[in-house]
Length: 408
Image (cartoon, rainbow, N blue to C red; front, top):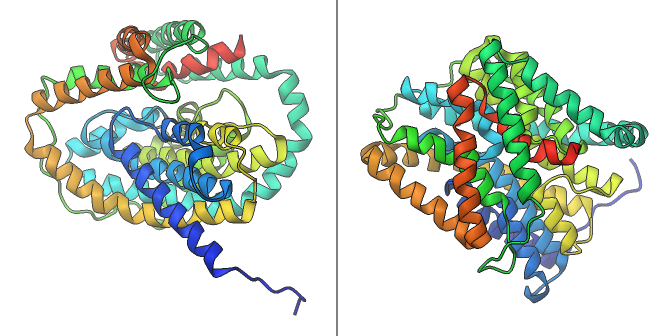
C-alpha cells in the first residue's frame, strides 16, 4: 500500500457542505427564474465577499456549486416557458418538440443524464486535456481572432440552406454589433454589481420566444418519464457533449451555445433526444474544464470563475472539485423532482398571461442590473433575437454578441 493517508477536519468538511448547500439554493433560484443567470449571482457574491463571514474558499465553493446547479436546472424554464438560458439556446427548439409531443418529463431526465454524465467524464479527462492545452495554448492565443472567425464561419456553413445561412450572417453581425457597443458600456445598477449581459441575453434568447408564445397553446399534458434512448447511445452522446464542453473551458469567446451547436452537427441524426443530452453535457462539462483552465492557464472562461477570481478565492482544487461533485449529485435529483412540478404548474396557466408576466419580469431584471441602458439594450436585443426564426436559422448565432467583439 502507498504510505498515503487522507484526512479531513470535521469542522472544515461541515463548513464546505454548508457552503455547497447555499450554492445549490442559489443555483436552483437562477436556474428556475427566466433571465437570471448563475454568473450574475456569482458576481454579486464576489462584490460582497469581503463582508461574508468565513474563509474565501467557502465563498468560492458556494459560487461553483451555484454555477453547476444552474447548468442542470436551466433546462426547466427552457422546456416549460420557452426561455432558454443562452447556453441552452442551441437545443431549445428540439426540446420544445418533445414537450409538444408530451415527452417533457423524459426530456428532463435526458438532460439530467447528460449533465450528470458530463461531470463524471470531465473530472478524469480534465487533467490530460489541460496538459495538452498548456502546450498548444500559446499558438491558439496568438491566432485567436482567426480561430473565432473560423468558428463563426462554421456556424454559418452548418445551417441547412441559403436562407438560413443569410439569417445566420445577419444575426452574427447584428448581435456582434450590439455586443461591441454595449459590453464595455458604463451602466448604473441598483445592485453592488452591474451586468449588461442580463438584458442582452434576455432580449436575444428569451423575449422573442415569449412573444411568439402569447398566441400559443401552452404546455400540453405530459406522459410518463420513461427514457426511450438506449444506454449505449446516451453514453456516446454524453461523451460528445463533454468533449465539446472542453472547447468552451479553454478557448475564450466560445460559449456553451456555440459549442453545443457544433456538437449538434455530430448528433443531428439522433433527433431531439440527442439534442437534449448533448447540449446539457456541453453546458455542465464547461464548469469542470473551466476550473482547470483557471488553475493551469490563469484565464477565467466563465462568469462564475471571473467572480471566483475577483473574490480572490484560493484555488484549492480538491475542495472546489468536491463542491462541484456534491452539487452535481444534488442537482441531478432536483431536475426531475422540480421539473415535473414546474411543467405541471405551467400547463395549468393561461399562456398569454404567463408570457406577458415573464416578459415584465425580464424588463424588471434588465432595469435592476443595468438601469435605463439595460432596458434599451433589452428592447434592441429583442429585435435582433427575432432574426434567426425569421430566416429559419439557429438561435445560437446570436452568441455573436460575445464572439464578434472578442474576435475584433
